[in-house]
Image (cartoon, rainbow, N blue to C red; front, side, top):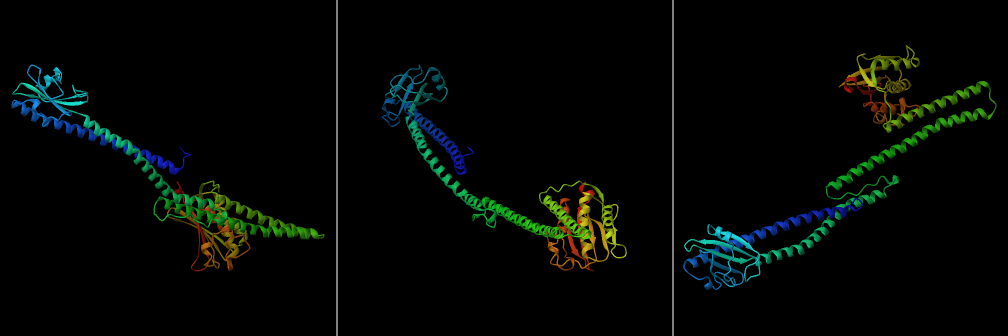
Length: 456
């Protein structure tokens, strides 16, 4: 069944439903017509019994009806006397009694209907009505053949047997046409999707004009294609930028080594070359680590070892780590946070993110750097505030983009991954990273991390 095309499956189901409906409707109509014909025949027998009873009470003879009360070949009547013998009958019944003794006993007390497979002189099924005639102490039996009823029902059944399959065939063809018409937009989308490749992700699936489920499916798939195109563009840009960033330290490392080997060098020159090469190797290692963090973040596999952490302890640890780069009196690092503020976080990653912010501030902003923490709606904000020139206004919307660098006061020779890693770590914790320029000068960059109470 699963290998049958969808249009044929829909047509098959539709045909089976229509067949069941036609069968049920046919049975209902047939039963209703049969019931109506039976009721009509019973009513005719009652009317005929009243007319013939009136004739008998006037001492008339059944033989003199001459088709006015009893139709020849289709209806008949007989009169049974008090002794159970046939007193009179129409042709071709003769003198043979049509009812049994038990039926005759019941008929003396009231009307009774009886079905017979055949009657004398008429080789056809018949229906009888026996009624008492009190004044004569007799029983009148009137009857009629059921052949007309059978012929009508047979004609109706034949019409059903001929018209039913024809109607079912027409319904199946119509259902198949409707199914093909309904699936035509999906087939058009399938053909277009088969033609779309990585080099043509800007194409979109055709949408039907009707605002139906198929159009909503196409809109959803087009939105998915847009996301795939955007993601692939980011990946290509990421690879290109990473290749560019890796090329520079590799070229410098190669140049240092080639210069060291080009001619004999003194021990001091070789030491300087080795130190320069080691510095470039360190830069390569940091860049590789940063790229690995971002790649794992993109894949949702940035492993976190979560535990309750004091916000003040984290800020103090980061400040102590960078204090040698900011001697007292020239570049101070201040911590302002309550010990009561607690976050559930991976402490090494959180310290790495804050360290990136402090490193940026030390590189691009003179003066005091303040590390603060505060609570907002159950979350904890960890701020790194400097008193430098701040970010260029047009750079703020893309401050956390990868390989994004600001021009001017905050530009440098970095790879442009520091703030991107900060954002990735914040998102991995269920928070976010933000940046803004202060009104009185300087930059304010912070992480919003869910607090311990909210996480619990």
